[in-house]
Figure 1 (cartoon, rainbow, N blue to C red):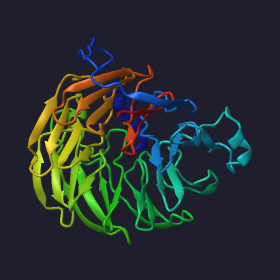
Figure 2 (figure 1 turned 90 degrees about the vertical axis):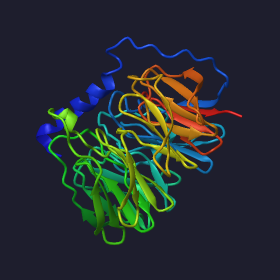
Figure 3 (figure 1 turned 30 degrees about the vertical axis):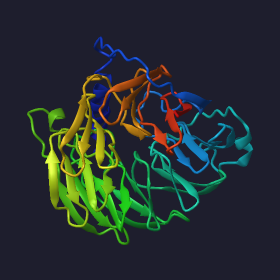
Figure 4 (figure 1 turned 120 degrees about the vertical axis):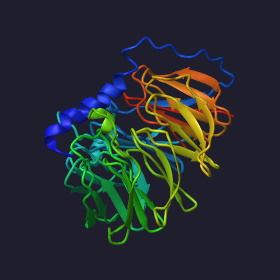
Length: 393
């Protein structure tokens, strides 16, 4: 990613985000047949504000971990929402003194952006300032290292590694205990890309990644050597924006098959071991997909929602009621598919047929990232940092 074109990258994503706000869009009428219960609410800093940040909370056992862009990371009891600890990355040593103060201010901004991941009894995240950070489960700083580039996606953790992808497309593997670099793989990016990168996935000894040039590849986790790389999207069109082919969605891996999708590209299923194409279909998005059973769920670049049979690529259903609304990626929660929008609504769909079953107006700041679930609860975080835990029977 070239520094000279970064304003264009941001402009491209802001143009996409603003597409729904420039038109008088009407939400479809919905009669709520379910009433999700709010278990608790908490505010954490100022969230991600208007930035295009993939910072999402996670649920680990009985604990919720969440962060805000300015540098706050906190842990909460899942059942009650009671805060266990607060860490401020803007304080050089992450002093425990600050963990007891609810409102912390600093003129600096840590710019946490790379999501939160948990493994090896530690919490990992990255920043736009080029830091990768590890905290202990009780909120103490374990290590903090600088890498060569912005960390825009959450780290992948597994096989004795913490792997991050920089905005320039470089994958860097670190030791989970001390942050020591194990290997680095440089992946060239085109001059113009969307501001974002694919979250890497560690699976069966491989690191699976997407690129801004429309490729999906696998590295050998132990050494960082490339096993294979396949092009899943080819630039087309006469304008720079129409030729964007970023693979920004996190690859989905199931039973030896990897599913990937590109912006202005296609949805493909490839054999994980060899990269051999099993099928491809004409869908496109930069949002993450999700999978339940044999069904893939996705929100395309225009706000249409789809369910696709993962075995054949056959479309199961399509829901166009939120066309041109700027939606989050979908999350499967119990019998439902849930998406948020940039007006602060949560839309609940029957995941078997795509029909709307409920809509909730929760936070006017809107939603940019998808919710997360442990199976019992659904957790969402708005742009302004409000965390809401929900539950249905």
